[in-house]
Length: 372
Image (cartoon, rainbow, N blue to C red; front, side, top):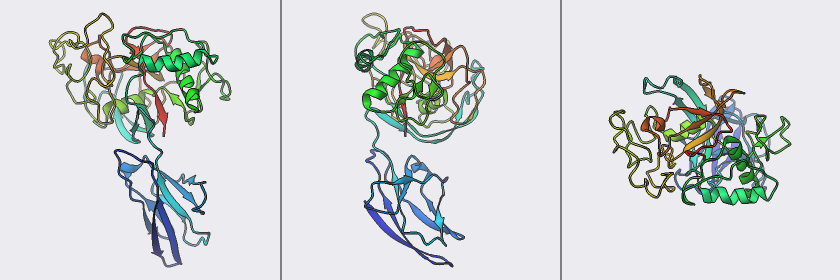
């Protein structure tokens, strides 16, 4: 722990504040600087906005393990100058990144058909502000699916589809929306986390069986879940706003596993046909995890390989705003990202797919997210 005593002199009194900067190891972000400044009769704490995945915590006793979150907006009002309460300590904290996941930082982005492709008619651009979250760097593989599936079926869970695959380290597919939501709950419980999905509004009955649309999400739970459509698109863009694909405005078969049609789409650099590296050994022509370059957030296969289920019901108009979660009801659930057998237009960040949630088909898989 780094303790830096700061002495802030104001017109009312002299404050003695110790700021402790404590963060879990992070391989990308350097430990941020936490500052303090006078604001009238208040003291204000601040830190760089690009380090906003850190949580500000406070305690009055450095020997205590009970640090509480400071919930004011940034900049944070720490306390009034005229308050002569005990010395208060602050720290910026970020828990270690879960294995196999990457941080998707909080903040605004423009969701939708920003580039103006004329064939995307249900994705008018809107500004979305997303909270930070973790996301699986890779699609859920069949081997990962099977580990949780076997535990779940021995623990009272029931699935309609057992999942299909080409090779164990390829993505699982032929799983419907209900199956993957239940699987997320099982993954949570197996890891010792609180499940996200329930079959009652009181969030008591964990969703483990059947295919019901009466699924309630406890968004504050620390378990695994499907991304919302907005979360998926923010993650897919990898910080590149206004681009067609996760890696730029064009795509090639050296960047993703899809079927090339260069004579149809001028942003498709091909070559034409199935990706020759993986079009072997019969259908499906999926590819192993990490076969192509990651996007700016360290995520693989956000374009191509298999489509990915999202939480949302399909709605023709985006909600926008803060953490939108789609319509409250509908007939079809969203999937995103393109697959090995589809053309480049399906792999665009703004391209939307939707289908009945009980539909299981080759070419649709998923990945999980988790709250910070």
